[in-house]
Image 1: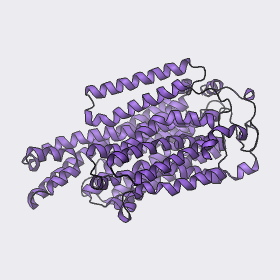
Image 2 (image 1 turned 120 degrees about the vertical axis):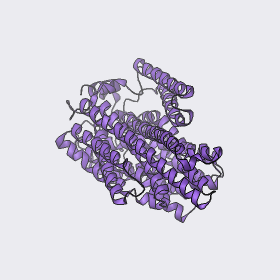
Image 3 (image 1 turned 180 degrees about the vertical axis):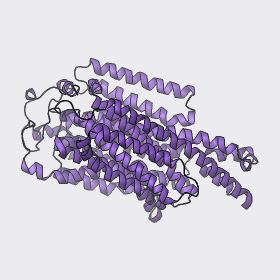
Image 4 (image 1 turned 90 degrees about the vertical axis):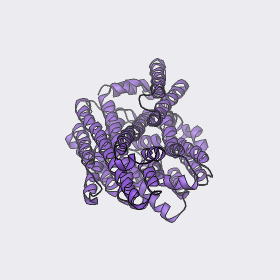
Length: 557
């Protein structure tokens, strides 16, 4: 039934001018609709990090190699990021509620398949399929929200709640995953998605009003193909660069190929009569400045989580669940700051709040570079509170700025651009911070006398990761094992320090750029907003501005 939604929504769509009050029935359901949207975004945000704590178990149960473990985590991100722009555009065209139901259904089916995977290769394929579902869900949720709350403080509040669920889901993933692994088999970290997605599908049908672009221009097939190819090439190269080497021929060629495809995409979109993404929107400093802030914040957050989860599990010897619970200060502070950030921005201006958020982020991550094996958890918790607050103050007002730059008709594409910057920042954070960390760790480990006395094969194995060094130590006598573990911990902390400073530098640089780029407020009225009513007849497209006109109005900011 939900598959048909993509083709029959024209009957149920209506477009209202901004001065028309939403129908009471639609307005009364907005709270339940917002809860449904938050549930949908939460489940895919959790899935981005829940698998991380399961990787050691998967290595044992599925006999997965290091390369396969990386792709179990990255296949989801690669497909998710690569399809976002195309999925947002198709949701705008065919109907966002149908796209949400289709995405949730695909995500649930792929999660069920993943939970029963009998090999690492099968699980990698299932994770890629989950990425397809997530790509349909993510931009659709924000587009629906923007249409339900077209203007004013209500939209800012709703986006704040949406951003809180997104950030909190990322930080909550390790908690949920750790608890499930302590009580159930590894398949539970994927199986848990199925009932949540099923509830969201039913609630979406009951409470979420549908919406789409009333202009219904022809599908930009060339734009869809080029955007998927270009973004996928860039993300794939970022993922593999740490193994290939950042200055290797393959890495340079991968980035060059991705850049070439994206340049072709830009040229195509500029010349196409009905572009999937009108690139003139990037002339709007509210859009481009806020996108930069979102990218930098996710870079810093994922780089920090990548390092701190290893620190907790290896240096502090916490369990998977214990590690997740100790990330709660990040999740809670993200949620609180995401809700309060837009309200403060309404008074103080977006520039001040977003720049301050990135500044808090930089201070918190820089502070985390000072941790040692003996650092108390209370000190680390204080660092995480700063980081989470910085994340909430950055992403919620920045997202509201991005969506306020566009007509609600193009909310799906706008949301997809916003979501792509998140995924790009997150992937870059893990790849770049991970590469810096690995390089420093391997170099510092090689300088330790306890490791230099090991056989060449054992030294090479120890240099791969802290976990590998612990495995080597377990095969030694008591005294040599203690020395190797101490040397590996010392090298790990040096790598953590370097990686944290890189994340802090990115956040600080972005704060400076935001001051220069991001306007405090819109300098013109927001683009014409339209409220969609599921039971009304669609207004003729001649009564609505074209996509180009909507974007042109937005770019006057």
